Length: 106
Image (cartoon, rainbow, N blue to C red):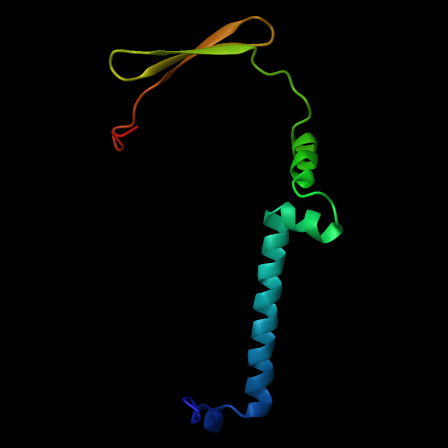
């Protein structure tokens, strides 16, 4: 045993249950994280078609809202983009997207 001298400090009656308890807590934490951060696992475990949870979550989070009717992008000479967005009520707005100075490949 590589760490045999450890049992001279910590008796096996204490060390083994603490070690197994730590493994159980870690495993439980990983399973909770997977179930709470993915939708396909819950679908799989409940026997539903994979991906159906995504649609249900999307409709619960953002019910059908009016979205922009159209948008137009015009490249500018300096490398930026001018975006014109026509909103559902017919008004329009513009946004200017400038290239990042830190990442010139964009």
